Length: 308
Length: 328
Image (cartoon, rainbow over all chains, first blue to last red; front, top):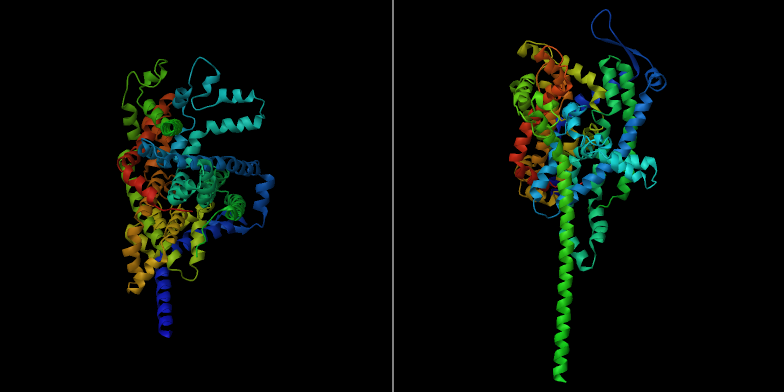
């Protein structure tokens, strides 16, 4: 018995040692390329940075909370952009989640031409990049091409736009905000699909990992497609849904076209390091707390197998 | 008596046959309608995805007279490859392509190497503090890199351990070389490394412990188990991560602009295509429509190599995506 204990502890020690050796690069990277720069930016957030007149480099003078105060009280639109960033996240992420789940279910079905459809659905991963979006924004010829018809003024809104649809729905007497939301979803359908490549992939993997025997058993018990979806597919994919939710939130907060990210980058290039760092840190604390809340609430509703 | 029973039996049988036939027809119609709806949805979404590419292709083939011609909508009357040729020069395409290829390929391999080893260690070879390192690595996803970009920049601007860099390259610091990108990838801080580490740990978590316990009993060491058992199993997830890593590296504009502002990269030159066009023509092109033709040609040129590779190897990629076993 003693021998066996000795043996297992020896193996355990060997494992731990190898594990440490395996992760040396990542440990080094996390400390040097993540923790240290982050700590430095925290220092910068609490200091007044000015170029050193005598020698080269920068001088850091402690400034207390003044940078943070500036961000909220003096800066013309920091607060507004903060609200805008969160608002965009709240309105876009649910749609992305729905869209990616829907697409994953679609391409998980059997139909002729499925392999082509799968290739096409993965295409946005490849060509939706920040440079591409920047080039496309405000492109004259594309807008000219997309204005569907020269006959009616309404149609000059464009091909994938929903002006007429919005007008039509408005006639039902639905509230304006709802109609605006709906038509904005339709207008941004390409943007939404281009943001959900990774999520589609994760969802598809989740759908395929559901054991077919569950569906067979449900079929024998007389369950229809509706019950199968809500009682098997949805709970079994729920942990992946949570992962996608968190990933989409992160994606929307660190995206290059996020107003706050753009603002802090602009202030950085204008050499206003202190303000920029303070703004980033406020943003970053808000984002982390939103993520923490989502993760804690979400993990309560997620179905998982009991792993031993 | 006997005869009537027989008649009853036959009619019963007929009724049942009739009933089941109608039921079959109903299910057939239902599956047909379902298929039709499915196909329409798939075709619709595929169209939305492909549409921008078609527009780009159509626009970039137009010549200058075409864009003012009301009759031309999709197909140019005088198609030209001139826009492509112009954008090819403006983007410094050959140099940019080689640079981008080198950086993307090397960074992909470095990222995969460090992520794979570390993720395996985080799941199966726990050591004191491994949980903390894992959390920090994943957490780095949440922080926009803009937050600490000045520190990152100055790290590499004055990077010179033991004076080695100056001795080898004759220059001070590593800015305007590939090294910052390579080093960051190798040390697990490249583009979206946290995501790769997370996906890999999910994958290794799903591999049963019994598999390696058997190997330990047979006397194999942790390293041998890793490359003889785990690595062959991990091929699908590695391919998936490699595709992401390569594509994001290719499309990256932020890091290459930060660390190597003077080198040509495809995505970077596409991002600054207005300035690049100005360099060639000597002045701003005053015609937004003509600029638009050039921009569309440039963006097609930028994405073409990726698209070609993906379409050729799509079967391999998509199969591996699906077997990658990422489960949240």
